[in-house]
Amino acid sequence: MEQALIIISTAIFGMLGVAHLILTFYSRKFEARDTEVTTAMKHTSPVITKETSVWDAWIGFNASHSLGALMIPLFYIPLALTHPNLLLPGSYYFVVLLVLAGSYLFLAKRYWFKVPFRGIALANLCLWGAFIMSFLN
Image (cartoon, rainbow, N blue to C red; front, side, top):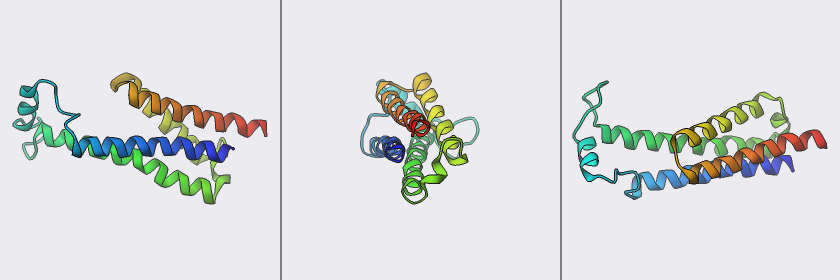
């Protein structure tokens, strides 16, 4: 059961990552409600460099953020299926996953909105459920 909860948890991150990537490139969901802001972003460079616009950096940050979320299931699902003993509570890989999931939860609560927060909260509940269940068996 712990293995299934870890797979479900990481799959949630994957689904959120795919949705975020699709919305980044195939929708206008990340544009500002004020069109003048979006226009300004497209025609302004950040202080760090003139080689890009704030808009292109924004799209790039969102895309790389999506890829980070996608890496979680791409790494952890095969690991859970082939080497579940490496995901025992207290193991390096499980602790890294808990810290990563907790960090995403903090960021979602502090900076994002309800949908990703709820999905990430559910993923965290699955992980903590796996953690608790491992001690009950």
